[in-house]
Length: 340
Image 1 (cartoon, rainbow, N blue to C red):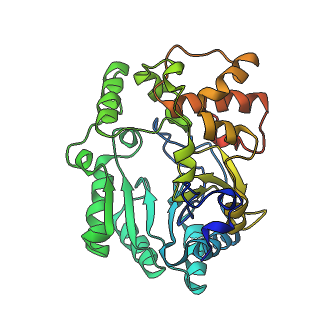
Image 2 (image 1 turned 90 degrees about the vertical axis):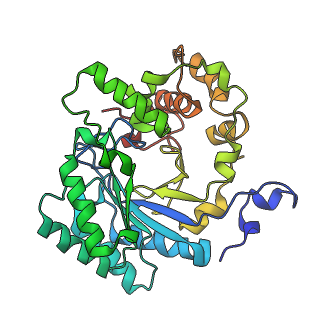
């Protein structure tokens, strides 16, 4: 297991100063492609998106995480929608099992593929055999636009029969019991359903969620975030997400690339990462997104009257910089910045 002192930022600190945590979990984003294009998606996933993580990239990152985080290191499989490329996912899990790696803590799905019970049972048995711990099913008013509630209900019931109820997690299960169907609603009805959902389950306004959804609830001027830096977000992040191209995102900060596992190991990404590296990350670390506002405005950014959150402001500014093709090694990839 890696020691905290092996990180270049940590080694400069006094013993009593907060240090960058070891990354102990990794979300392997097998693809940006997804049959749904939910308004709350942190990564802008959708039917027109691409990317497919190779078994080689997945296994290298997985093995590196276990060396980095030790016995507590865990992986979860996500996307996009990993079931779009089911065979690729099974190949990754099969190779991980052969390599002696612990099985994934969760595999996430929206259930789009669960049209027939026989297919559901067959696929769950396969995933059980290759080491899946739990199946996580996403269901909420946002997914309801794209996947029928009856289908998701059948998947949840069948999964409990095949795997056991303790190995099935339904995100926002109350909506599965009392569905809020937004498909076919008027614009006003849809907006109200979304506002109610956001009150029950606060959202991180990055990716597509920084568009229509954030605008529904935006009520704070940019200056209200002037004192909100991102120091804690970087230092306390317990893990990363790794996209199909190998890009590493700290915690849930989609679109801020802190390294790439196709270039160096995840261990090396962690060891070399410093939030005081003299670029956009250092500004976020010390000042938060408000610290980027003057630079963006000087380059032509038009400040919005209101923002929904600090993350909303950050994403708007980063999208502007992405379009201007600045900070190209850090702000990317394009999938995270297109609202389509």
